[in-house]
Every structure is written in structure tokens, then in C-alpha cells.
Length: 456
Ligand code: PHE
Image (cartoon, rainbow, N blue to C red):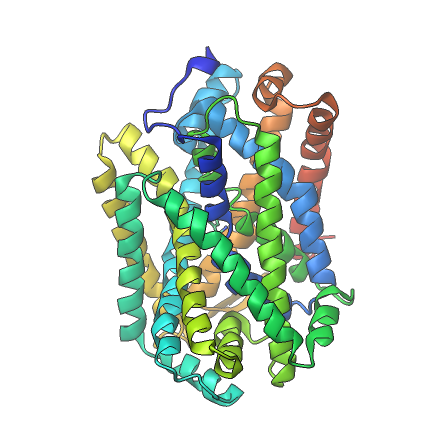
């Protein structure tokens, strides 16, 4: 019965197509913008180690579970959870897992688009040659000028959101293949090139030791590392679930997951290795926050041979990487609107995109006219702007919570025969997966949560 269920939205044409799309979703601003800056803020070393552990012990098993649930349910995450809960004779309230994911995706998209807008504007800044020979201060002040100008940010945010809506309206499958097949390897090659440059700065080893020498880490740092493992692999909100719902039956979920997780992790580590040597060579602060890549990489482009060309291409590729992630952020909502509200894809994407665009204004203003509008809750957080609130709520709360419930559903509530049938892998891999998902993943998520609110 389940094996015959079909997605009304169609299927990936090939197995490779799914891997490309899911890798496109995973590799994005999270790897190149976010990973370096939160690594810097959390002091490197131990943070990177905890992040890698979270990828291995939490991210990979949850990704397999999410793809599996999606492929079995073959609908938007909300309807998938409804169907699977009925089929496994569980409470219908599991539908809330899909709902929370849809809202999280929408909230993430609202700020993701603003940051992608920064990257877009850097295509033109780099191309204009302003960074040639620029000093660290010069580069930082160019960044400060950008984020203090709400009109500029608004224009780029609008363009990026429109680009996202157009692709989603056409259906995620069209056009994506070319984008990912050629551009991702190109991004990878350019990153290697920048790492090569970083090696010439004389501070490469300092960067390496910052990233890999264990040191202190705070409880919030551990929470950030876990949240980031979910964010960077696009887990906990249904993006990978909805992509899984278009996956042909015969494809190995285990192999696909390993490939996606490896590619994603390598890109993040390369981004770190490219950026931290530049940070130290120029006396910058590793904890400079969300502007870190925009304050460091342009220095490198300004000094490298053919840096203007390399830098421009780099930002173009970064925008593509962000684009292929952004489309997966609204796909759960669009699939659901198409299934339940009878909308066509065009209407569904326009509605969702416009709404996320509107919420994105809050993020834009957080960097300028509302930058002093902050709030705090004692013991939980301090001086959050609207942007940091959205960022932390999605990243540190909603995604890990989504992951926790996915683990519980897939490993405790779903019948073993169902998950075995779907995963179809060697017995030892299946057992290892189930043990990790039953015990390690939920316990780890709960401990990190409790630690972060300082209960244990
Ligand atoms: N994984 C994406 C990135 O690293 C962001 C993302 C999160 C995409 C959640 C989809 C879902 O940039």
C-alpha cells in the first residue's frame, strides 16, 4: 500500500537529482556565512568538535529519518505526518510537527533572504574593484555602510525573495539541476583557492589551531553547535522531508545521507580555513558576528592576483548556494498550500514569499533604525534584536525540537517493519541507526536544552 503512494507534485527524475537538490538545500549561507561567525563567537576548537559530534550522532540519523518519513508519506510535511500517524495508529497531533516546521522554514527564510541580499550586493562591490588594496578598516567600513542603509538592504532582499519565488513557482525540479551540478563544484573549487591564499598569509596555522585546538566552551556554545548541525543540514523543519517525498522508492537513503552530510561538512570546514587565517593576519576579531565573512574575504580578494574576478565569482556562487537553500525553506509551505488550499504553485509561492518578505523587514531594521530596540529575558537571553530573536528561536529552539520529535516518531512510534522497509540497508546499519535515534539523539538534545537554560 505504502509503496504505491505517489506524490501529486511529481518525483525527482533521477537519484542524482535528489542528492543534488538536498545538497543544494544543505550547502548555503549556513556553511559559509554562519559557521565561521559562530565558530568565531564561540572561541573555535571545542565548538567545532561539538559541532562535528552533533553532525555524526544527531544530524546524520535525523536526516535519514526525515528522508524516510517524507518518502513514506509522499506529501507536504504536515500531511505526511498526518498520514503516517494514522497508518502507525498514533495520535493525530503529530501533525503539529509538520506545522512547526513550516513556520520555522518561513521564519528562517525571512532573514535568510536579507543576508543573501548582502551577498548579492557584494557581487557588485567586488566587481567594482573597491576592495583592491583595501585595508581591514576600509573593508569593515564598507560593510557598515551597507547594513546601516535600510533602502539598499530592502532592494537586495526584494530581489532575492523574488528570485526564490520564481524558482519555487516553477517547481523545484526545473532549472535546479544545472544550477547545482556545475555551480556547487565551482564554489568548492573557489573555496579551495581562497584556502590556498590563506596559506600565504603567514597565519594559516594560527587559523587551523583556532579551529581545532580544544579550549573553553559555554553552555550556549554547545547549544549553538547543536542548533547549527540542524541548520546546516536543513533538518528539523521539513525541507529534507519534503524533498524526500519526491524521492523514487529504490534510492538508498543511507548512501544519499552520507554524501550530503560529508559535502556539507567539508564546505563548512573549508570556509573556516579560508576565513580565520585572514582574520588573524589582519588583526581582526574572530567574534565579529554576522559581518565576519564580509569583513574578511574582501581583504583577501583585494590582495590576491585576479582577486576582483575571483571575488566576484565567489559571491555569485554564494548567492546561488543561498538560492538553492532558500527554495527548500518554503517548499514545505508551498506543497501544503497546494495540497490543502487548492492553490497552484504560483499562487502558493507568491503568498508565502510575500509574507516572508514582509517579516524580513524586521531583520533589515534590526541592523539600523531598530538596532537599539532590544529585549532580554533574565537567564535566557540578553539584548536580542528582532533578527537575533528570530535567528535564535528558529536555530536553537525550533529546529532541535523538530529533530527531537522526528527522532521519537521514527525510532519509537513507527513500526520496525515500516522503517526497515523504507531504509532497506544492512542489518547492522539499521540497528545502529535505530539505537542512535532512540537513545543518543533524544538524550543529547534534551541535555543540551537543559544545559542551555542552566538547569543542569
Ligand atoms: N542548510 C541551509 C544552509 O546551511 C539553511 C537551511 C536551513 C535550509 C533549514 C533549509 C532548511 O544555509
